[in-house]
Amino acid sequence: MNTEDLSVDDLLTFIANRSIKLERLGRMMCHAVDLSQGGLVEINIERFGTDSLLTYIVDISSNLRRLGLVKCDQITGMGLFSAVMKLPLLEELELSYCKIKGLNLEAIGYACSHLKTLKLNCQGYRLLARFEPNCLNIAKTMLDTDYQIIDIVKRMHELRHIQLFGNRLTDIGLNAILNGCPHLEHLDLRQCFNINLVGDLEKRCLKKVKVLRRPNDSTADYPYDTSVLDLTF
Image (cartoon, rainbow, N blue to C red):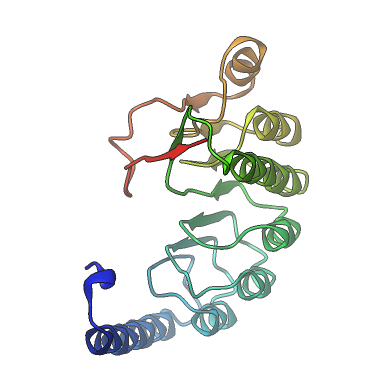
């Protein structure tokens, strides 16, 4: 639904109905967690997670090994950090299309230094070569992403699998991954169009990684939206 076409009254009704639906889904999730009696080892939350729900889950399920969060806009970086600090056995973390970034990601890297699998997926974009005033903002976004990747991998030395579908990282971030993850086996860089995977960098990837998914590889097996956003600069 395109909410931009709704009147004020219709928009308020839409928000109220969505809140009721999210609350209902949260109660259902809590009930499922209760039934597990602390035996839950894997959980995936899509579109309706909150900090309070996440806290409820980890307080009961300290043996959780996999946590997946997809499009969970209401989960904050601090909420996630507090949650993963209670999960000493966590091996796989997915944060796809979430708004957690910057210092929050760095803190999560500190809390999850033992992770084996990390997924940080977002919508891919392709830069169109046309000068615009926003080119500096685009460049800053790319550099910020590299710094985030550097801050994460300098603590997560046990990573075997990394998926960065649509990520904004550049060659700088990729080199940081190759330097900081000595056990890396699988690297998914599909729709990471800021990477120039040629020459020595390509050779490093092929030598170090057993399974490499390149920026332009097929997205047929990717479970989420694969549309690409075109940005001008």
